[in-house]
Image 1 (cartoon, rainbow, N blue to C red):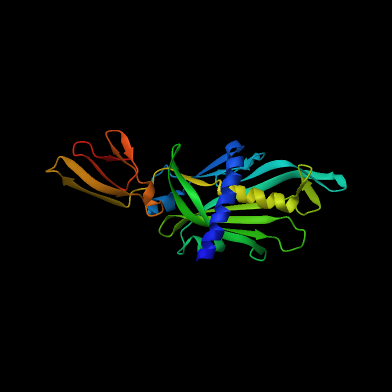
Image 2: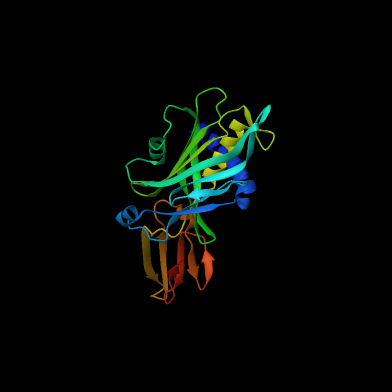
Length: 266
């Protein structure tokens, strides 16, 4: 368990660094709403959506609602610059209602099951409301690599829970450039480039919108002059992000007290 925690911490740090340097300049941000049948079945609000940001130097080429294609910088074959093209990422977002945790759902959504597993692990997905971060959701990602030596193609899958038996699933494919006879931007080896861009895109995912509270408890104190209580957001988000408001001043503790005339939660 300690070894997993250390590896997870190192990976989180590397992904945070990559996101910090690239997501701020993302060319495209895709916003995908939860499909209505799944949303209604789990009583989730209509404004809840998954946001997926492209890496820098990638822009939207096409989009069909819950899937699309980003196109990035030029690549060319070493020694044959006439064999060239543009790096690309294929993306899709779906909502899986099967039983199982994030790891099981992520692995179940791998398309290239005959490829080699490159890496896997836990990944925290930010939960935001507007521009404000309100918590994180622990998901699980898997990276697959085409098995042939020198092949540069990668697949990445990230799953994270929205409710019991409901997971958001993000899937990315880097198919161009296809192998390591190509370089990107005049110097980057194709496989290193593709792996890095898939990781950055997965780490740039976030959940936007309110989740319904799971626990709301309140009781009056001081002979009814105050109300003390606790609001815990949906089981998916860290309770440490719960914020209670008293006369406009936000509190970060999970338990708060308000004057009885003005209790509210944010």
